[in-house]
Structure formats: structure tokens, C-alpha cells
Image 1 (cartoon, rainbow over the protein chains, first blue to last red):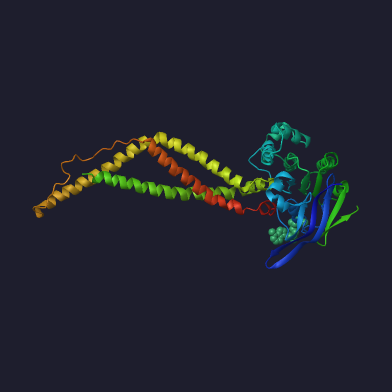
Image 2 (cartoon, helix red, strand yellow):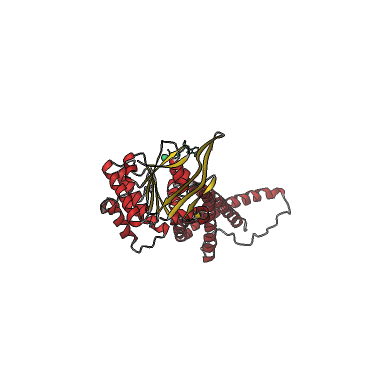
Length: 225
Length: 172
Ligand SMILES: Nc1ncnc2c1ncn2[C@@H]1O[C@H](COP(=O)(O)OP(=O)(O)O)[C@@H](O)[C@H]1O
Ligand SMILES: [Mg+2]
């Protein structure tokens, strides 16, 4: 198995009102390609913070995040986010004045993904994830929450990266839809050798993943479900 | 009698200074507001991996497009408007200087031997023919360009301080 993402002696804390809140305490963990991980833990334990470190939205206080063996600071956080990782947020984070299709195409243009017919590919992805062409051409605010999250997932998939990071992506979806999405994540991991890391509250989702990781006592621990 | 035309020239100069400075400030403030309004969008683009320099560049292109539109509009209407403005400004100056001369003539009684008729043999300038030369257009275009760039770049520097993590993860 190929290690794609590695936390090395990772430390992170927030400072607020002169109080130090330690989130991660000397964490060492490796994520493999072709593997679907879920991260669980109580609210406020630091799951979102961990994902922001993994996705290059923030830098550790000490220690390092390695992508295929290279410190992501050396790659450059912008380039790392642009070329190697896709992020799916809890609150969709779509550009609201654009259509679903435009959101996906814009992301493809920013990352410079090597696809000639970007619009065609975007429509294909949106359809794969459950949006009709008519819905794809609607402004995202005219879509339901679940549909908006699908657009965000399609946007993440459009960039052909091998690392996909998601913060409670199915939190606002009904159970049938969310199992569909999880099925899609599984397929991407197993058939396209991507590494998928998903934060979830759902034991059901965690059971579907290859490895369930708990954020416990400021550390990442693998647990058998 | 060239006083009136000199006054018109200095008035116009002041108008140019005033408009340039006020224009830069207003444009700068508007762009600052725009950036604030589009914080979320900028954060999303940054999270996808867009470079900050590119975002600033995009903002600049947007402003310059509008500037180009406004500029071409002003080139076509500028001649007519400035002719009307020039006429009315000059008319004011001519009237006030005629009044002054009228007063001067009244005062002459007390100023024997001191009336030099300097310039009196020159026909007073009481109309101006305004033509906007390509040089004027170039100069104004340059000035506009500088204003647009400055008042975009300065507020746009705040983009450099944007942190996508704060923008995207905080409001959850
Ligand atoms: N910018 C911040 N400043 C100070 N404390 C923060 C900040 N962001 C998050 N925290 C705190 O860090 C802890 C972990 O937050 P988070 O990673 O969002 O947890 P989770 O996603 O597991 O719910 C929480 O207690 C939160 O209050
Ligand atoms: Mg969270």
C-alpha cells in the first residue's frame, strides 16, 4: 500500500483569552491510497481542525503533514490544495450566484485539470452524483441542501486528485442519499485508488468505511467497529 | 484682456484635481466594500487553490473593463459637454471682469494719469472653441488608468490577509 498522507509528530492548539486549547498532541498517523477512512469523535474534539491541517488550510504548530513524503509547506499550501487535495465542507461552500455546472467548471479551470470538454465532464459528474441537466443549469441557491452538497462533491471529484477530504458531507442528506454518496466514496477508493477521509457522526457511515479512526485524547486511534 | 481665459483655465485645473482625488477615494471605498461582500466567494476560490495574486488580478481586470467602458463613453460625449461647460464658465468670467472694468472706469475720476490701457487694444476673448485632441484623450486615459489601478490595488491588498480557513470553517 502507498502512503499518501502522513501526520508526523503533529501538534496543534488554539489560543483564546490567554488559554491554550490543545487539539492534537504529538499525532503520528498514515493514510493509504485506495482506502476509505472515517474520522469520528464528539463535537469540539477537533475533527474539523484536523481536516484543515490535512487539507493545507492551516499549518501545524509543530510537526508536519507529508504528502507522498513531501512536507506540504514545501509543495506550497496553494499548490497543494490546487493540485493534490479536494475538500468538501460541512456547509457546501458553493459560489451562490453561479449555476451548479458553473461551480464545477470554475473549479476545473482553477485547478487546470487536463480535460478538453470541461462542461461535458462536469455534466457527466453531476449526473453521476444524481443531478439532472436541468438541475445542473440552475443557480445553486435554487437547489435543495442535499443537491447543493452533491454539487460540492461533484466539484471535488472534478479535479482528479487522489486525496479527497470531507467534513460531514452527508450531515444534511437523507439516509438513502447519504448511503448513495458513501457508496460512491467506496467506489472511488477501491476502483480509482483514491484516498478518502470523511468526518462523520454516523456509526452507519463509519461501518461502511475501511478504517474508522477516533479522535480521542488529542490523538487519532483506529477502532474496530 | 486675457484674465477671463486664465481664470477658466485655473478653475478647470482645480476641477481635475478635485475629481481625481475624490474619484480615487470613492472608487477605493467601493472596491473595499465589494471585497468585503465577496469574502466568502474569495475564500472558496482560495480553498480550491486559486492564487491570491490571481484574485487581485481578476478584480483589477473587472475594474479596468468598467473604466474602459466609461472612458469610451466620455470620449464621445466629452467634446460636447466641455464646450457647454467652457462657454458658461467663460461667460461668467467675462461678465464679472466687465463689471470690474465698469467699477474701474467709475474710479478713474480719482486716479488721474494712472490709467494705463494695457491690453485694451486686444479683442477680449469671449468665446472658446473646444476641441478634444488625441493628446488630451491620451493624457486623461493615462490619468484614469492610474486612478483605477491605484484605487483597486490598495484595497485589494487586504485579500493577501484573507485566511480561507477562517472564512469557510467559522460560520458553521
Ligand atoms: N479559531 C479558533 N479559536 C479558538 N478556538 C477554536 C477555534 N476554532 C475552533 N476552536 C475550538 O477548538 C475545538 C475543536 O474545534 P473543531 O475542530 O471545530 O471541532 P469538531 O469539528 O470536532 O467539532 C473546539 O473546542 C473549538 O471551540
Ligand atoms: Mg466540525
